[in-house]
Image 1 (cartoon, rainbow, N blue to C red):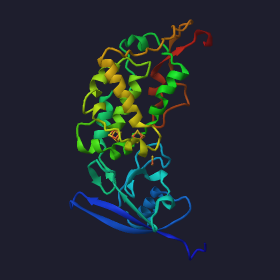
Image 2: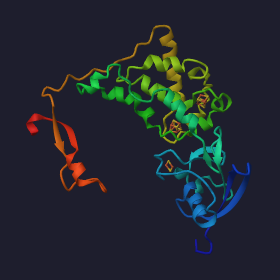
Image 3: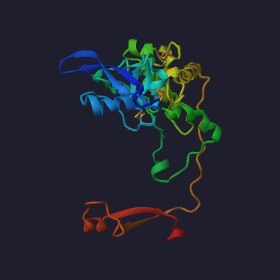
Image 4: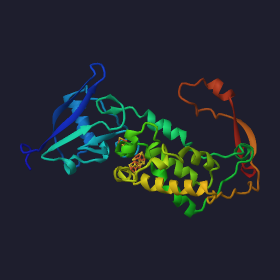
Length: 296
Ligand code: SF4
Ligand code: SF4
Ligand code: FES
């Protein structure tokens, strides 16, 4: 292909102005190159054609989860979707993810995703804080137990699954596939001790029993997390727990270290200061370190 024959792509972008309360579709012509992603095309528009176009992105490598958009009707990560593979007659349509309030153009409000994620306690809960604070312990996990949660730990919170879920759109109280998957991930984590609370939260029609199991959430997940599969397992746990037939498997706790660490006070070495810090103040600030006595 010669320079003159370079293909052009037409990007039809759904736009929204909150000031004017107006939405419209705007077309842009973008030169196409091999490997160009939807995010590359949006950046070309932003930098060369129209600086007013607003969209969200960060890592450009499918990791941060912030560039989710609707591409030709499908929830996708803009940075992972090559335009050549999805253009129809050289036209690609890009809009905001459905099921979320639109802030501006392609930027959506993800408050509901983060709030629901927070509600399922997406962290390991231990009942006795002394286990970690007073005597640092290791909570053991076998490779098999790790494999049980591994796939579900890959979630990047992009919200594509929720955008694809009809129940999430219809029921504003539905937790959604993202949060339900994380509930499952921590319920089966052998190191965690808050399974009952999470089961009580999800075992209802706004939780795992509200799912219709059409699995459109799993079909769009860019990390192969399989939220639909997690929700089915969650249902099974919820039903068995209500019949008294499910018991949480607990991890073994490693014995305390044979050689207890010794807590020592130190000060910052000179010449290793945080930029802009006062050297005298930093040198006077004590630091506590836990050190193997043999290393002293
Ligand atoms: S489960 Fe998949 S689609 Fe849903 S938020 Fe996590 S990574 Fe995104
Ligand atoms: S399987 Fe359940 S959570 Fe996933 S899209 Fe369907 S209804 Fe929503
Ligand atoms: S920019 Fe981070 S996932 Fe696309």
